[in-house]
Image (cartoon, rainbow, N blue to C red; front, side, top):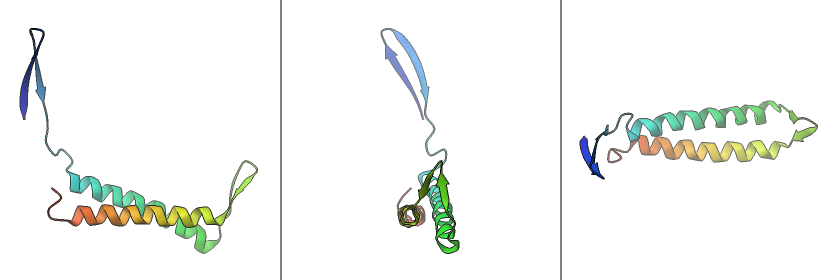
Length: 87
């Protein structure tokens, strides 16, 4: 899609690309990323891996939250990417 804008006597050509990556593909990639984050936290929970930042030990409930939120976002992203009307 090409447009020409005229502003103060100057002509500017704007080229817009529609759906370079595509909304569905973006959602699928986001779903994969969020899934990997959720899996990492699930592994921490299953294997009881402790995490320490400086002198602060990160409690395990943080990984429960960090499992649920990205898993929900991944589910949402995959659902949108598989929806036939999302394009």
